[in-house]
Image: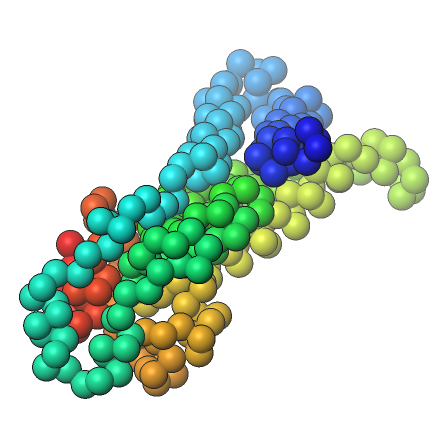
Length: 270
């Protein structure tokens, strides 16, 4: 029972991330790579910069992993303004059904629009995107921008690590000799290569969704979501254009009243 509680708390996953990150970093620094050769010459700019970016990636990982993703705490957070309701009466009937507030079947709280209950976290999350098992946390309205920043920094570190690992490979006459000479570095190169592809795909897909002001959950399940299933395949009631979507996502710090944006069809929702 104790081991299970430790696993559920995310300690093992977060520890594995940190251990893997520093194991690869030490391998790149201890093998005969560009970073080690520069350090031995007394040129510490690139080795120190690499270590700083690795530290930044680990810091961002813990920010995303431990930050409140946008938990819904009370019913008071989910009040649609009277003005919105008055405007609502003048709109077609399917909007009334889409905007009708509902109580979560698990935690019994009123859910704001775009929120979803995460069974792994046991909470309702504002602007729910997905539950990330590697973070052991949900990605939602409050930590989504940090998640993208983490992916961007992580991708830069991984690509840099690929270049460093490549610089350390030494030639040999046979494959057996080559593997004995470069085994640890080759293993690090393979692991970093796999993670580079995964992070690149994640970053690209999330930037695409953010530019349209939609989430992974909405993109995958729009046919089951009450406020989206009546919309056409290319219709998004939250889309205000790429630049405004990106500005709202990266620069808005307050909770967004998505019900008002949905009803008004494009005015400022903050």
